[in-house]
Length: 350
Ligand code: FNR
Image 1 (cartoon, rainbow, N blue to C red):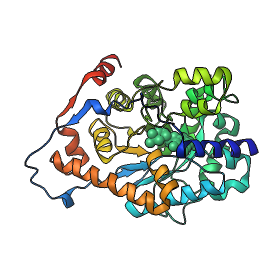
Image 2 (tube, helix red, strand yellow):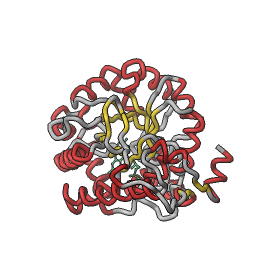
Image 3 (tube, rainbow, N blue to C red):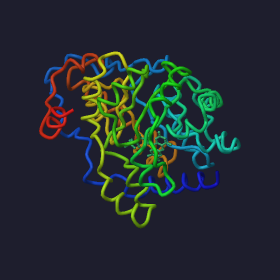
């Protein structure tokens, strides 16, 4: 358990200041252009982005995705992020609850209900930790923080770059099946920056998964984070694979095409602006997710720093709606958009 806490702190340090977003990685959102409307015929205040997520109402279709927990420092991050979500009507997820499964005293750092009573809240556990804990164990983790849903994270790329990581990825769908039985529509399956593609998405949806976060390539790279901690073979292979993954724009567009309109789709991975969020919403996401930008703003400026960063994002998102002449996400989705270059190639192949 001490090893888990230590690793988590090293991860936070690297994410706060390290080069965890390799410059050559891209979401391919630069290949998406929303089309300007010179006569919007609407007021900014008419933009209504409210939606439903995990049975609760959101004022903005935004999720602050799971990052941390298990230490005092992590507790501050979780409470600040949850506070932001409550203030603005967003959804929030805690980071991997492995640390609290190993050490019940770490639970406090995940408990955010006191500051986020109305927020759709996600617990979080890795696929292979879920095997160890069993469905009952995972259910207890969700209950302990009074979560509305459970995020199950997939991270094969990270595990392979981690010296102490998993090496056997058999039986994953079986685990998901068991969790669907317990959590039903409250289960969300997410990647962690390498993307979920249409084939995996379809299989998960066929098993009854109702919520997916594609978490694609282009932002925080967990292969890179582990590469920065690794040495020898792992460091070298990590360098080789730090741009591995399905770019976020390709993942969300192809997954929406594959699974139809029903499943709730979150798009995250490298979204940094309100315009980025608008683009994934146009490509088929119900909710846009962000981790690193809000984490970094919080680490340098505390809650108010994160508040300022979020204000810029929300303002950009509203502006994108107005300048495409859209009052809602549904209207935005019906507007034309241009898909260029490499993204076109990806969407042809997927
Ligand atoms: C993460 N992420 C993550 N995901 C998860 O499911 N469980 C976790 O414990 C963590 N931990 C974590 C810590 C920190 C500091 C960051 C920045 C991220 C992954 C995160 O939820 C998201 O999928 C990716 O980071 C991609 O989004 P961004 O960071 O590019 O916006």
